[in-house]
Length: 327
Ligand SMILES: [Zn+2]
Image (tube, rainbow, N blue to C red; front, top):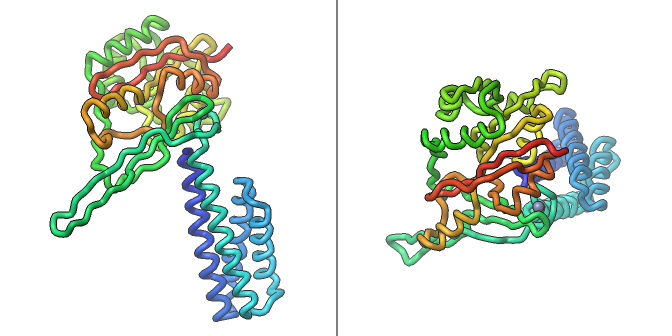
């Protein structure tokens, strides 16, 4: 699930409701030019967004009709109009719900079709009454086409989440040694913060890391981008578009440069769950979890090819990847 698109759909649902409220208000107090303008703008924005999502044509058409009618006042505020308004409202909401379902099933890596793979259920008992809560707090989907796993639902209010823990000194040294096999020393684009332990260890290992945040890296214009022999992404935080981040990071790569990144290892996490019988993960969750098969497909989509990768960690597994620009 691409979080950005899902958020856009949620904004559209809210916009539908505020447009209906606006029109109801106009029906009661006819003279309000400002409100009329806002309502028309809201409807036209909705129409554009629905087109962008390739929504059902009749819903797009009806939204446009509604905007034109409000704009030119070619109607009387009667019961017939009211009926048509609510018909539009419910059909728009229904279409948005369909689009949301489709979004959950759309793999954020390859746009293929995802199926439910794993759901973590939270069980909570109420001390006084015989009541209990049993609901899915996390649902993971697996893509039929590329094999990647991705997060489709998370109820963060129910999950007492631990902050992502820092890497140990030993792990930093080992991963820098992995990078050293391709490029020992020299300047490195460090996508992350200077206070990160990995940044400090990179300096100790003889690299010259230049720190840049993910936002900065993504925001730079084409011509301003310097090419690096090493690009390292310290941490990809949750609910971010992994494909976009990797594609952007790849733009900083010199022709023979390497890109280092890591992510949660889904198979390992599932095994831990089975062994320990934990009903859900309390750790930080990522939007895309990696698998042996999935990382190749992911790299492919981002214009990269995998040079090497490694499974690390015992408690919560991760996969560390070294990739290069695809030839
Ligand atoms: Zn896929």
